[in-house]
Amino acid sequence: MNSHSLIDRIKNHDADEALREIFNAYRNEFMLWAVRNHSCTMEEAKEVFQESVVILYENIIYEKVTEITTQVKTYLFSIGKNKIRELLRLKARHQTAEQDHLFQDQDIYHNRFDEAYEEKLKKVETEIEKLGDPCRKILTLYYYHRKSMQDIADLMNYKNSDTVKNLKYKCLQRLKQTLGRQMRTFLLLVL
Amino acid sequence: MNDQTKYNELFDRLLDGTLNEQEAAKLRSEIEKDPELTGKFEQHKLAVDGIRFHGRKEMLEKVKEWDKALNGEKTIASHGLKRRQWFYYAAASLVFLLGVAYLFSTTYIRGYQQLAASYYEPYKYMPSVTRGESKGENTLEEIIDYYDRGEYRSVIMKLNEFDDTQKTPLSEFVLASSYQALDRYKNAAPIYEKIANSSSIYATPAKWYLALCYLSMKKPDLAVPLLESLQKGNNAYAAKASELLKELE
Image 1 (cartoon, chains in turn yellow, blue):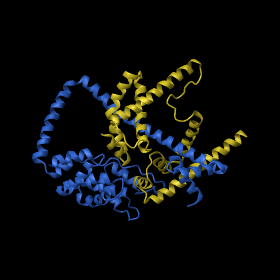
Image 2 (cartoon, rainbow over the protein chains, first blue to last red):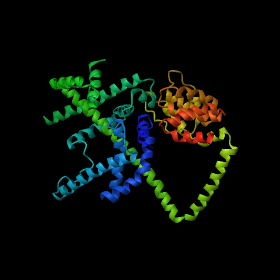
Image 3 (cartoon, rainbow over the protein chains, first blue to last red):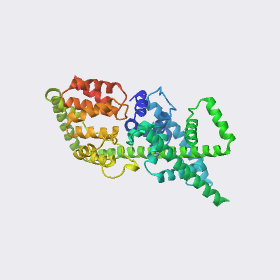
Image 4 (cartoon, chains in turn red, cyan):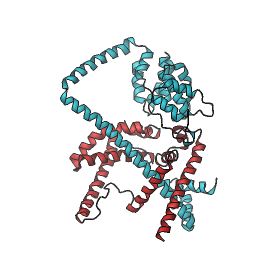
């Protein structure tokens, strides 16, 4: 699959199939390459590859990349290479910390958000789970997968995009209200 | 549009970077000056980040499932290969013979109908419908369960009870797919035609299945333009369409 085709397929509602083809085509080659050239364990190489595929998807849907000038494989491997470097850096830091009996059981992959904010996000995530469907699905399709209101209507069998727009508004408000209540409870306990 | 809706949209656009410089600067200044708006923005950002965090986790889970599936297939294959190589040689010979027979039959014996049948497999990506308010008897969610179980007659019966207000691109696609699964191409084709000409996300699969319907109805002249358009586009059916076109040649 060429890079132009990958971007088009991901944007045109064929992301799962397109990504799975990429995944199946390069998974083993990537793992061998990572283990041989970057001193990763097989398990680490596997996790890095999985995460790289997700990053490839996100870079396309969030339009961080609109055109891949190299082969898809080269682009995917370059994402993987950066992830490996990040992993090795964090691992080194982790080992040093372990020697000092500090920071044990840290997730070596968490690098996107700082620890306190990530904790907050985990709480938001719990609330999203509690909202249940269709709210959970509408919000995820809209904000994470960046689907249009019309696409969501088609996917979730709603009559039209206006229905989805209204529901999305209500779901988001419900989520914010829950978060607001949590925040007030927290402040009451602290004060 | 109420204030909350307006700000939700503006916050989304600010976070996505789709506001122009002037609009973004104006909104940032409003947020900075008004403590209530600051709180609302922070809460909105946290909610959106949380949704994306959740979406990313789901996506990673999905990729892990692909890994398990791929790994499972490989483990079984390598294990079997070591223990029963003779079996694979025999199987390979059989596959070769079947392949020769298949080529012979598709090229010289089989008609359009059989050619279409060799490419046909039921559409297997029907989304899980999760409309909270529509749960109950004969909802599309329940009907898709019937479809997944291959109970196409029940699907058709139930979907034909839908009135116009209940019909959606998805329900129509499920109906056409069920007709096709039962070889009722004349019923399936007009529904697929309607979807294929719409902007629905089911337009591309509808084109592929419509082309197969036309072939089954011995109308290759109608199937070919659809296959050619699929072949040119970047979609999951491009490779299969190209292969089928070659066979039709």
